Image (cartoon, rainbow, N blue to C red; front, side):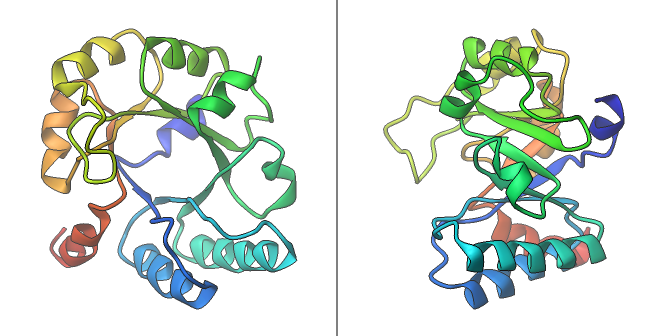
Length: 200
């Protein structure tokens, strides 16, 4: 558990869900792999069939070339079906589990929004969690953001890495760490990462 944690970077990239086809997905995701990112989560709307399986395998090969951990947003049993380094559980999937659903050879992450979900994540011995939303986001404008103060209070109660998510950009990394975050997770903010990659 600790070994996996030590390898987690402080910037965590999450894919958009809006890819129309696999070539479109590949060109953008491989760009991220080449930019210096070390962990990348796939959130995909594609049907989970043989074509999906084949493409995940190809992406994983690309990820390995660049020493990137490839995480699939899915359900625990996906770990047996696809060539990936770990699974990220949505909150509803997290709450369905009573214990860690697969071995510690793989990375287990979870999305959390409150104390109850963080406590469940602790029970499952996750390698990391996302805690969101910190700030107002374009994708969920009506959701009440928790703000940095509430984030800090919640994070102080757990003993695993927590990434700040929701309305976050690269410039928030320092502030996130000052408030107890292990790092930041970004979806829409990732384009700015690509453009900044040369200067990092």
